[in-house]
Image 1 (cartoon, rainbow, N blue to C red):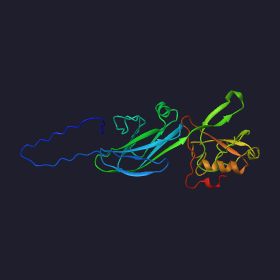
Image 2: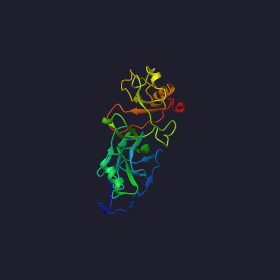
Image 3: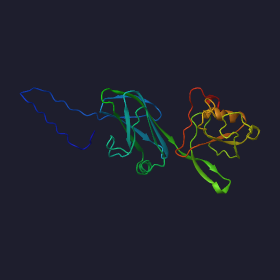
Image 4: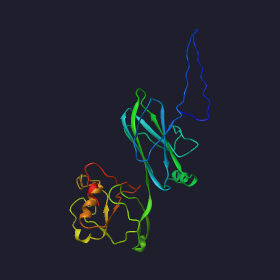
Length: 266
């Protein structure tokens, strides 16, 4: 394990007279990751490669995706500035899947919110460890910070009035600077995976669409893609779409994927 602020003592013992060269070194480099841009690297067996991501926004969900090309690297992360090189024995979050790893940090996580409050710019430090004992691990590391805002406000009914966390899709037009206000109408079927049975009622309205369902037979690809659902509602004349998650947990980022209708969303 890598240690900081410590001394390493090395003893060399020979059974007979011997000649040797002893070389020591430490990789002090911590590479800066660009938000949303993948970095391809390699890590030797039993070693670490280190990275950091600057979190310039104060309220963000963080996603770190490690795509494995060879070997078995694992992710360890922290926002503890006193420990900028997290290890298997000293970390705050980790992902140790045998295949590719995904690390999700919710904006409500106490460690993350504490860092955001205490620091002008919170920094996420990431260590990638070469778990494979025999071969170099090759990987791509993609770290993204998704700003979360109270962009969705419910006025009526009063029982659920208030602001709700949300963030926009990365396709289609940007949200207007002035609030877009209107009646919210549920799509039918709720997941909008097939022809809308209430299309006439959606014109000029903000439409509520449900993510999913998980049953692929009920909503097979490509109909289940976010952009394809939104395009179907758009064709019915909707002025906006609110995509509701179908499971509890962190917000889900709506991104474009190959083969969807993202370029047709207006």
